[in-house]
Image (cartoon, rainbow, N blue to C red):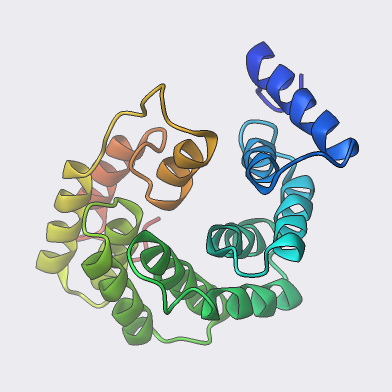
Amino acid sequence: MRGHATPQEEAEIRALEARVDSGAASISELFDLACLYMEPTHEDASAIACFNRILQLDPGCSPSKIWLAYCHLHYSMDPVSERAARQLLEGVLGEHGRLRAAALMISASLGSDSGDLDTGEVIHLLEQSVATAPDWVNNRLFLGVRYAEMGRITEMDAELAAALENIIEAQPHWSIGRRMFEMSITGRTSFGVARWLQQLREHLPKDPQWR
């Protein structure tokens, strides 16, 4: 077994890989395979290859742009990948709803990690993400941490409290893509997120640099 895939997930991955190898895989199947490569097999390079393939077939596929930018941010982590992620996100920032919220949030993380954006600029992007998707966890979590760094403790606590209220249970009928989106992008079903948020609420007012 790869990663921590269940026998059922491993069988699904092998079936999708066979479709890809035969040249019969649809964009939807490529997308599902890319998500499974991220979680549970943790084959990041394979996931990136799948998303790149999707964008070759459909250059306007915004969900794949979001995920490829996410992969560049969290897995590749080099200047070339950061530039590629920014270019991908530029094509999504004009979208509406959850895609725009995700693009804003990932843009904030890219700007923060690279040092290209100061804390005020990062906060502005995250506030826009929260305004667009107020029912998420991650955008409020990231915004709360930035508020704490600025000494805005009351606003920090409000964001983290709202994030706690936004946690939901994963549902068995969700698609593979929905499951990944809720776990990694919105953060609403992330493992241990409630405990993490509670710890942040306790520690950040005392030590804004605590992670």
